[in-house]
Every structure is written in structure tokens, then in C-alpha cells.
Image (cartoon, rainbow, N blue to C red):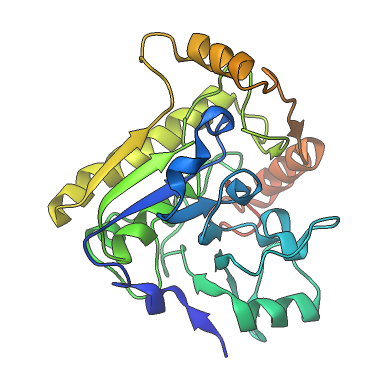
Length: 280
């Protein structure tokens, strides 16, 4: 039986809910702090932190049951974006009928594309059909705010689950000493300067934070650093102290393919839809 995200709404009224991303600061965060807490992981945060829930719009890239050489993690409840097809539920990058059936039996699904709304962004920029602040103001069916990064959807989910305080960890919205992630992971900049994408991540969360105040919900960020003046210095200090690498290379996944997609989309004038776009 297919389950949708609205079934999780108001599950934890008045609670503190932690939304954990995969930013480099997570590499040096004291994970024991999360013990006994309600945690929503973004994408591959499960590789580093203990999470009860996890959310992604790329199940093919982030859910261990769908990834080669990864062990299943049945303790994680997954919330996944989906595609509406004539045959029913579709998943981005997933073609196997068995995998789709597994997802239908085990995951919760959310939607992030507003019907009848066109994408206004260039082909190599994040689709904005899910940049709908009305979905942040109040729970709206199975829709979650989504622009550029899954972090906004994770925050919207936490709010709809009943959070009073939403605390973000590892959502750096920047690199640290050229590290984009806490662990080895792909990045998909699609030919765009990473700092531009990080600015968009920040802008999305900032506007979500503003709207959540109308619901009397606090959104804040928590880091392991002792100051804001030079976080990279403290990051390096903690990496040495904790015997963690100061640099983990990331892979520019699908870079050449993405450049080809951009060219094709421009030629076909298809920037008005969001199918195949590479939001994180």
C-alpha cells in the first residue's frame, strides 16, 4: 500500500527535531549529541549520523537499498520524492519494477512540483516549481517546499511533523577547506559555480525561516565550532584532534552528461519543466 508524507504530520507536536545534512562540519560534530533525539537525515547523512528518518529526491543516489555495495538500513524511515506516471508511482533514476515495488511498500512519498506552475529558471539552475512558501505556512496535502536543495523539504517536513524547534546540523551552505561533504560523495553543480549554488541553498532556508516564524516555529543552525570568525581554522583544528582527514575529495558526478543535457534543453526549449533536473 502506497504511503504519503501527510501520514507523518503532527507525529511529534511541540518537539525539537534535528535536520542533519552532509556538509563538512558534520565530520567533526559530536554525534553522541544526537542520541535519543528525533533526527531527519538529508540524502546520505545516514552514512555519518544516526537517523530515524531520511528524505531525498534522488532515491537512486542516496537510499542504501538502491545503491550497489551498501547494506540495507531497515531502521531508517525514508521519505522520497516521486514522479507521477500513467502506470502509477515513478522514482527518479529507478527503473527496476522490484525496487519501485519495494519503495511503495516501505517509503513515504512527497510531491514538490506545483501543478500548473512553470519553471522560470535556466536549465542549469534548480527548478523553482517547488519554491512555494504557502506550503511552508501550513501543511498542504503531500507537498513540501523544495528549491535547490532537499534541506528546505527536510525543514518543512519537520515543521509538519509538529516541531516547535528545528535545529539544523551539517547544513553548512558553504565548503570548508574545499570540502563539500562530511564524507566521500558526489556533487552535481551542473557547470555552475558552487558558491552560487550555496547562496541559493542559504536563500531558500532564510525564506523558510521567515515564514516558519508565522507558525511560531524556530529554525536555527548548530555547529561544533567555537566562533564564527574563522570556522575553517576550527574545522582544521578539530580534524587534527579527532584524527579525521582535512580533505575528502568529491566526485563531479554526471558533469559531462549535465553539460549535454543543458545543450539539449536549450535547443528544445524545455526549461519550463523540471524532469531530469539535478537538485540535491
